[in-house]
Amino acid sequence: MAVYIHSSVSHSACGNSFLNQPLSFSTEPNANLEIATNIENDQHSIHFFAMDQVPLDCSESRLFHSLTTVVQQLIEISELTLDDLSQTALLLGSTSLDIGTLSPSEDKALGLPKIDRLSQYLQQHFGLHPFHLVINTACTASINAVAYGKKLLEQTAIKRVIVIGCEFYNQLTTAGFNSLDLLSSEQLLAFHEKRQGLILGEGIGALLLSQTQPQKACYRLMEGDSACDTSSLTMTAEDGSHINTVMSRAITKSGLNASNIDLIKVHGTATYNNDIAEYNALNSYFGTPPPILALKPFIGHTLGACGVIELALLDYLLSQPTLPVAHYVAEQPQNIMLPFAAADCAMKSFEHVLVNHCGFGGNNAALVLETV
Image (cartoon, rainbow, N blue to C red; front, top):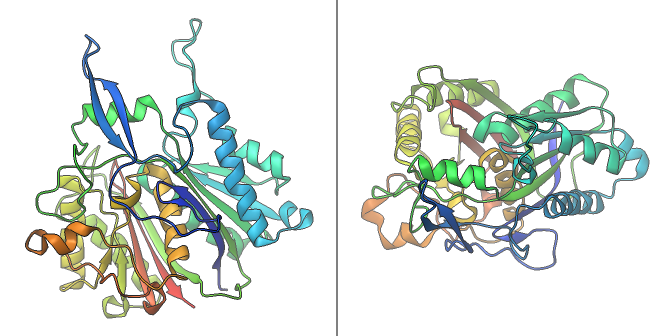
């Protein structure tokens, strides 16, 4: 039973794919944030990839308006009727959800909203099927939501699934990553030997999964795999063994082998440990890896949202004649760890695409796409 990415919308630092203008793939972060570095409240600036044309703040109105707009855009391009919507389930993957909108409460030691607050709001606002679910597995949250959505279509009577990946600017996330000393002061240099770390980003991705193939180039979801590496509390094994296992199972379940994979959409966070682990996994599994495509240099690391946002960008790229490749790849070839796809290649020329996501806490996921 085939399941397709029928339609998609993304809103990130590259722009909004629904609008009648091309996305802009720039490696220059479009925002700078001032954050406290110590108890004396000393401030310093960090780079950030904010959603294009959306003033940056932590307000509830900004979050709900942005989220509602993207889902409405997906519904419009998918031409879903009210009856269609009533038979459409909702899955949402995110790391921080709406944590940035919370205000301190004097009568609570710790105040947290319901984890399904955003999904419940969208389900009620758009009249969707009663089934809605939030997945919160660090950086693999929304790619796991896609895999779960595929199973819903294959194993239940649900007709369609909207899968959302969303991450919004908030001080807790930025201060937390800054305290871990994981942030780059310059650019996000995925798979560069002299990479400095990641740059955070925000964004929203929305996919409509359906058993009906759209009348355009699209992706069929083949098979995926997801598992948690328990060798460490915070990261996956640097030798890449766990990522290798997850990739191998995804490819094998798809009825393929290493030689059938034409392109790898890498996780590519540009942190030392994460890139090393993925690098080791790709080399151990493939021997000589096929070309890679890295999208985080253009949108930042959008954490739990990156799975759906980056799938939506891949879907957008199917209609484009070229690929986005960060300028440092051509400028410093001696420092590049893996073979990047050439910019003059068309996305639709790659038949089988492996999508990798390697999350904080060792949660790793892989998904195989077929271009049809």
